[in-house]
Image 1: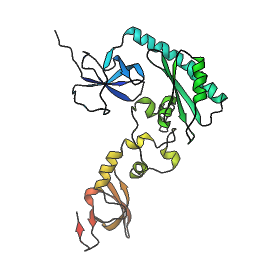
Image 2: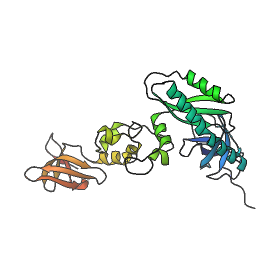
Image 3: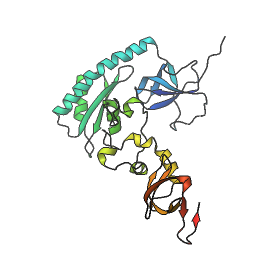
Image 4: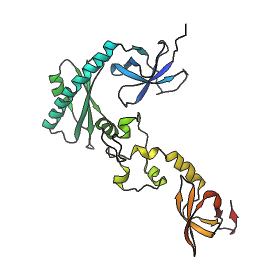
Length: 285
């Protein structure tokens, strides 16, 4: 008889492209990617999908003690989950209508999420205004309508809003990366665009969320590594055609555009040029 495999830690996602959280599964045997499990979270019991399996129990995760996986989800659990999902749109539409009726400036109601047992629902919203919002009246109205539920008003960021709303990306893909596969959002800086020679025009580097595009991070490490080997712009170099000044870089191909007096711009491979040292007018490799 084949021994059942036990993975001490599993990564679980609670949405189609949600953030991955790690749980202790040492007491549950034969878990596989794609299995659904019941776990305890800060918001009560939830059902999630196993995305990652770790055989090493010493893996460091969020920095807090990992909660245990309660059990594998049963067919009844999955049916219950589907049922609550069908009820979410009704609550969302009610909260959306009431927010408009209350003229809540800057509030965008994005969605609603039921807990696994149906005892709690979170109204997801974003705040487009800078000042803090008072949503007590909206929460009370929703509570009055659904008096058997525990109502939570949960603010989410602009990137999460874009993930939920979906839509075509600027690159032409039918879905944005955040809606397809990104499970977490990295810090994106304007330096990433500069390193890659991308136009800094806001429409060129910002996504629907109004933040810098996540894809600026995809090739950034490769650009940084290549730029570290290339001479900087305006540096004087020696080429097979003579001395010139660097006027452009092609990091991915590791080629350098050099302006040579009386010849004009020419492109060279990195190994074809030598940096010219100004102090003693002697070249170095």
